[in-house]
Image 1 (cartoon, rainbow, N blue to C red):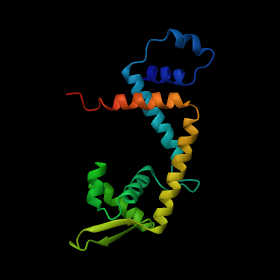
Image 2: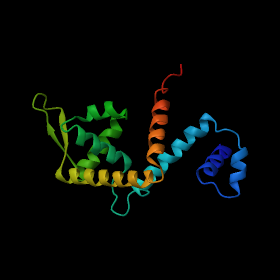
Image 3: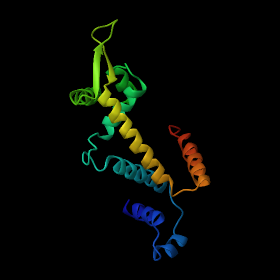
Image 4: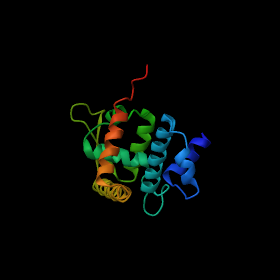
Amino acid sequence: MARTVDHINKMANPTPAALPEAATAPAPTPEDVVEALHQTMRGLRAAFHGGGRKEGRDLTHLDSRVLGFFARCPGATQKELALHSGRDKGQIARLIHGLKARGLLSATPDDADRRTLRIELTPAGVEAHRAQHARAYALAEQSAQALSEDERRTLIDLLKKMHTHFGTCA
């Protein structure tokens, strides 16, 4: 794997010394492509979250995902989030409990079944979600600057093409 990562790093950031080697390097393997995608996503997440809870960025990646879900689906339940995310019920319960304790989510009993709690963003949760969304938009703008309009279209088309083949392995 070290060869693959080094090969990808040279492709992404060619140095004058690496350029002649890149011209004679073997074609990237499917694993190289997936590793490049993985490294790109890790870099985007690291840039977005600033390496964790610091500089006023006190929401983790999962916290942001939970807030986003309830922003799109106000009044949804913990069970609906677990089904949507594919995450463990216990993990979802801990995430929701933590966000409620921080005043970002509120829960009210369902009118039809008082045992079921309907969850919504609080005003502070709405503001936190808006701030995360604004930061994500700014990061997208910054990272996409390196690509021309045609390159962005090509990249999207290629990613869609790859996505259509998910799950085709038996």
